[in-house]
Image 1 (cartoon, rainbow, N blue to C red):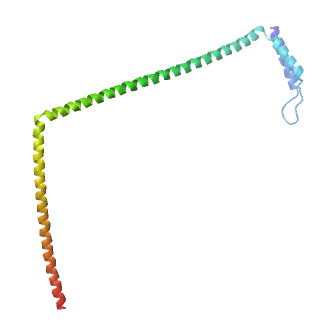
Image 2 (image 1 turned 180 degrees about the horizontal axis):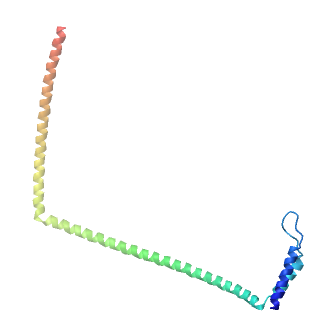
Image 3 (image 1 turned 180 degrees about the vertical axis):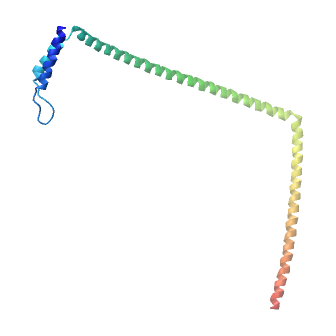
Length: 181
């Protein structure tokens, strides 16, 4: 209790020293005797109970422990992130490898199925009949195309002959009218 009263007295002395100091003309600053103020602060520090000093030391040590623990936790988190990224990359590579292998196997299966399909189609009687029918249809289509071309030529020839006759008749009428003028 006596230490508390002494600490309060020292704080009062420091306060009155600062309160009674001369002010600067240009701002709110004051001039204090440095040695006297530092002496009062030393006495104040020495008058503090030992528990306060121990608490201050404990606080400093706890901050150091907390800082080291925080750094250690950051290291663990960073290592975990790096490990997770390595595992993800490895899993992605394995997945890509499996997908590639499956794709290659699928291509082989598709090629084998296409080869079998072609063999079955070539061997089947329906294919032969379909081929003969297609040749027949192509021949008929060729004949129809010839008939259409011939009919088109005849139509154009008849149309041009009619036009020629009309133009000749018109020309003769024009010449006749011209001579009559």
